[in-house]
Length: 376
Image (tube, rainbow, N blue to C red; front, side, top):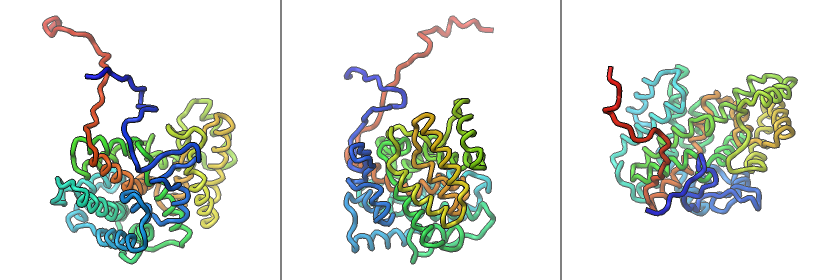
């Protein structure tokens, strides 16, 4: 065995493998997907184009996009069995729990569970890309005691999600803001949930197990659940007039303030300006200025006092709230997007696999004898 390498807590700064999928590039202050700046993709491409890019290396031409989108649309329907299972979910269950269960069930329905050929896994990816929004919407409707709305295969992914949740498609401004958020959330290298999917994949487990693991990791408030906590924080503050004092008190008491800081970015998350632009558009469109005003004051105070900048979750939380989504829906929406990055990494791991198995340093008790225990 080679000499042990002692990694820092949390693997901070440790490079564990290579990837061609994404990179944070400080020299251009941008996150790139396959070499494309994420802010350019968000402004100029549909989420379907970005989803294709994640798993096909290049952006699609029109013929490729049409075929990809049509396959996704054809896979949107949920089976009657899964819909029956969703009807048995506790109505107060967290949507991340219902989604994890739905994905597991989708996996059980797939007879190709152990077929991990590139062609089959690409097809499984398209199925998950299509069915995850349907499962989120179905569980949401069930939690409200409302009838399931079948997918509309004439609509884009973003339009169809609103249709399935609320029975209508909102104005183009809202759809665009939502589509942009999906692009910005699609991928971010070896973050906790993506690394989880790669660890599971490295054992040669199936794609559905890996995705369920990713969902479990993403649920945590220090990862995907942060966008939910941001909105809870904004509601706790409640009034722009008290926002600065709230932040100063939180800092003085050393409270964890969600939506700020990032393991990778030190001078600000490069995705934030684009998301903030569309959060501002949502505030203008809906007239709900209060949340943006509170957020701006909190951001200014945090930067001036601590030099810590917001991450993507900070503007995304209020944007989703103004779109009409309940707070516990924010992280499942993240999954709708991140399934693209997860599956790209799953397939990349499979292509050049070695089981991920680090060591640990034991710091517990020394050798002891059971016979020395004073039995009573």
